Length: 327
Image (cartoon, rainbow, N blue to C red; front, side):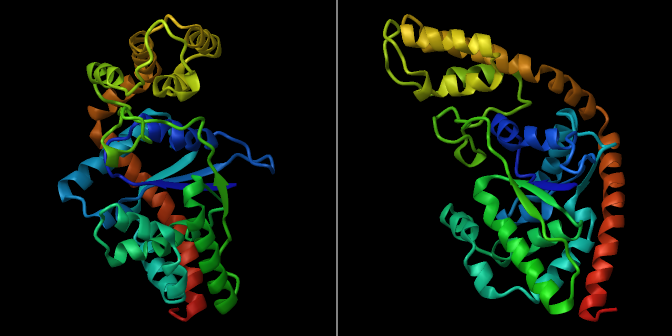
């Protein structure tokens, strides 16, 4: 089964990205489909999508390489997974225009993500409005069968299926209709201020930031004012929520017991959380340090991935061009 996913290069990846989605993306590349065949991963860096928020050119260039190194360090297997930069496969943007010409305006006007991003302060532009069409092209051009997304992105897959349906009904069966795979996060990943961890809130703990910075950020995690000697509810604690992600079951159970008995201060838990976070990501940190010294290798990985992706995209685009009369 062909699995496709993209990630925007909008800044340094944080542990919320990893535990919320990335880890499951990486697990899917090794999984076996219901038919018994090995999943075929198609993962890309969505730099065209990132442009909708108006990044500075140098930031976009650096972020693309940073995301590539992050994924490779965290275990993306280029023998099993096609990995490339969206802008290196221009067939996608050609298909996006073709799809734009059969996509009803009403369908795009009903998409909630445009309204949400404008409400967050992003200046409205055509790219932001037409984002779902480009996303549909990303998915359809590779005959993607499964698209792992968060529950808040399910509408995008429904829109993609609608667009593919309009095209197939108008010009004949051309595109595979993808299915969504809703990613269920292991847990809500809170930021250091208690809100959902997000770059836009500036409350993140980055995956690969210096260990000293990780310790400082962990010690700043917001907690309530319950005295040390009093019992505490672990299910209402931001520190415990993060501890769940990295502590082994036996240790987690022991911390839960300490919380409910009282006599344990949040500072003690924070120190252990910092240790566990640093320990968890240590092997990935070492691998990434090696990649930073070999940028040419990272660029070569993306180049070869783009060539493999383009070979698949060419076939689908040709079918679409023939169907609409361009060939």
